[in-house]
Length: 375
Image 1: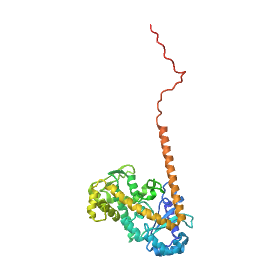
Image 2 (image 1 turned 135 degrees about the horizontal axis):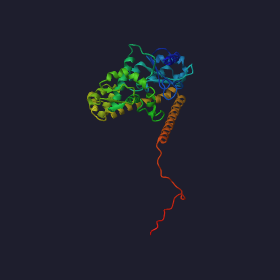
Image 3 (image 1 turned 180 degrees about the vertical axis):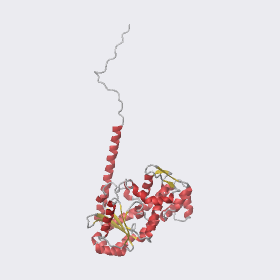
Image 4 (image 1 turned 180 degrees about the horizontal axis):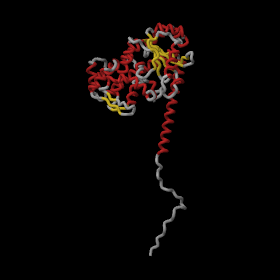
């Protein structure tokens, strides 16, 4: 507990180096939560939610001009805010920043309106996806803020989507891996540049964090899903997969996936009635595959556009350095996986019972058959 308080205090100290007018701020990723390495040794990822990006960047460029890459630093805060608001997932990242305390950080700036839209509609599933997982909240949103309502709705949407994607029987760990994977399936960086076991590395060490995050949400799903409270993450969970329940889940999906589902089903622009299409999809045995493809399209588009935007906002030098670090991390993970696999095979061989082989004797040891003397 004291360690966590110290960590939050450290994060708040970092915020002193930035303009104060933030509506919401959180830290996420391997720089906060343990995955395969010590969080303190990893870059810290931060998200700053602000009301007015133009004003915030103006203040930050006066305070931290070295954070901004050229030519955007030269073009000024209006150009920076324009790039943020019109390209990619409407986030502006400054990466590989060294704080006064010597910590490497990457911080993204997004407007309050853009964040709420993604949380409610899954326009990009970029920050909405990050907020499907445990994060460290540094600045809480105001009690009457739209952000609070949108954060809760985003978690409800994640459960609805995961239950459509999952079969009738599954484990608790599969449930949370499905939720965590919503914003990674379709991400082009998962093809090359990211650890292929990223979802597992997120969920397994943070399982208790996922349980705590979704406990109040799952109370609203009691009639649809049964997750045993034994604490065994591999124990079988059950859900109602009837078409009526599927209709319920589909009707509670965010707007963007619903639009894509309807267009996919009607093979063209949204011309058919949404309710009729969702009802028909619920009766389709391939409904989970249809939804999976729609979500992948959302993630693919936002991951490509935001990555291209990152080259401009970080500058070519930092973008190459950051990408190279990701690739090195992926290669090391693959090497660890190979070593673990080889070790497992060796242990199995050592534990296996010896095979009884026929005794091999030399030619001299082989006795000639006794001659039989006939009377």
